[in-house]
Amino acid sequence: MSHVIVMTDPTLLVLASLADGDKHGYAMMEDIQAFAGVRLGPGTLYGAITRLEGCGWIQALHSPDRRRPYRLTADGRRHLQEELAGLEQIVKAGQRRLKHV
Amino acid sequence: MRKIIHFAVRLYPAPWRERYGPEFDALLEDINPEFRDLLNIVKGALLMQLKLSNIPLMATAFALLGILVTGLVSVEIPRRYASTAVIGIQAARPDELRQTLVFNVALHVLSDKPLKDIIEQDGLYANEVTRLPMADRLKRFKENITIEPLSPDAFKVSFTYPDSEKAQRVTSDLVRRIMDENLHATEQQAADKGIRNHMQMQLIDPPDQVPKGASLVEMISLGIGGGALAGVAIALLRRRFKPSH
Image (spheres, each protein chain N blue to C red):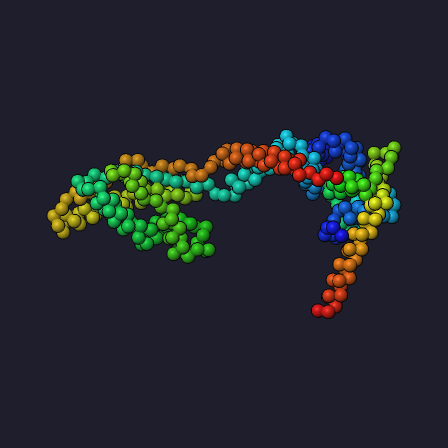
């Protein structure tokens, strides 16, 4: 794991949102609010989308509508799994330590 | 709000707008943006400008930020005024002795009792009455008074305060007290030792009201210049150290 995971990291939230299927910007925003309780602003959401597409972790799909959907790539799925594993490790360590105090 | 949002979206770099503009507009139509979204879009646009290092836009954005910061600083920091008077000295005494006589007179006028009287009479530091005891207000008052020689024949009396009229009134009061004290000392010496006219003082320049520190225009100019330079420097640094991937 090369960097610290922040639980409200917008890129992680976008990756998690796309893990169960393709979504456009508004659908991602609604989904993230529903599963994480975090409302990403439009600037933050598209900042994350720009970064993730630049890294090749998500890809834009062709659409006749302006609302262009995005899909998680294989690299993006692998990266999300690594991030979540790291997060899980932190959660477990934190809970274990809390029990011992 | 929609017009302002539309303007804010234009702050994004052109290549970004070309790629993401239509879908970003569609998202904004779906969410019915609020004020917090406007701030979020401006922040996103600035970060994207930073990422793509558009030098003229970065310079403009930081210059605007500079105007905002210096404008706020100017409004927050109270303006101060220095009121200065010049008193001339006439005495058939060596220069060093004149300065000593001035020093003695000033020492008497700047003692605690007369200064406390001025603080109370002019309501100085009224906002700090609950926070600062009289001893601290007195200390601040002394720090704001300057008495220093300008030449062998003249010295200046100056007081700095946020209220220009009070600054001028207090300086006039200090000048009057110094001249009265000198007259009193002269008469005392005449009575005790038969010496007359040991030193005569006369007001050369009456107290004025001069703003101290940089004006709003100067501060904003500084903000524009400093902000633009910072923007160019950051854009160049970003360009130089841009990650290769």
